[in-house]
Image (cartoon, rainbow, N blue to C red):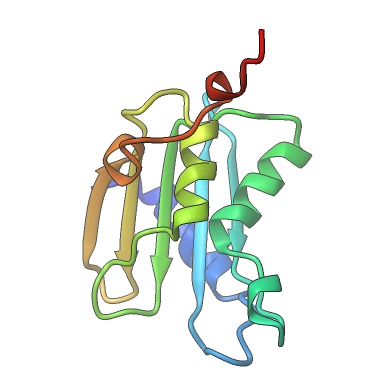
Length: 134
């Protein structure tokens, strides 16, 4: 079970999701090594691919605050079962995670939880090392 403070931050921001098309609210919160919590919610657009995932919003808030490392993640969604982050968000979370053991708690509004590490969510992550051109 995740730290309740982090899960509550995700639950609170989920209420602000802008989802006029799907009505599928998602909230995400992450903790940095400094202990700061940053959160984000999904924001839809009529051109679906142009929307923003909750996890990406939380990462953007973290970067806006001048931090670039994730120590823990919580995501909560309107779903009967915990929903894992999309592929793009898995890559983003893994890239900013302090290591592969960073815990990602996926929860439902009814209290169900699934906990995995970022390495379990994306075992073959692409990294900046793959871009070394030296």
